[in-house]
Image (spheres, rainbow, N blue to C red):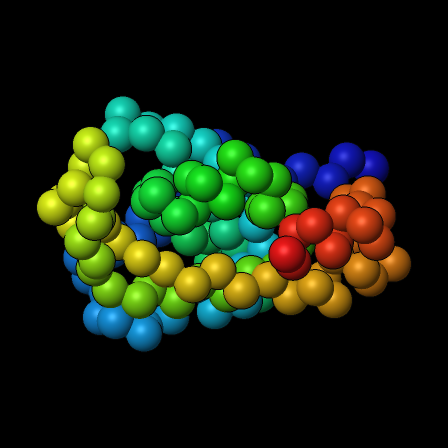
Length: 127
């Protein structure tokens, strides 16, 4: 028997402007992957209660994704830290949104996870 899952709907779009510093955006969400809309890359998570949540890109999320720090199927907590000011480079003086990204390392080491991740991969991700 087939096990269908609706992949056509986007989660609730969480806008940074609606959060206060140190407020949790994703409590304990399974990373589903990235998607795109007219504004750019989106990060999709599913909370334990089944809620789908979507975060727009910010510099840190984009950078971490490019470095392979996000693993499909792993559990994350995302905390909004607030706005900062870029201090150098071509964007000097511009505001940015900062977040803490916390990985539940047990979620990638457990036997039930179908994501193939070696111990050295885990060490690299947590570095």
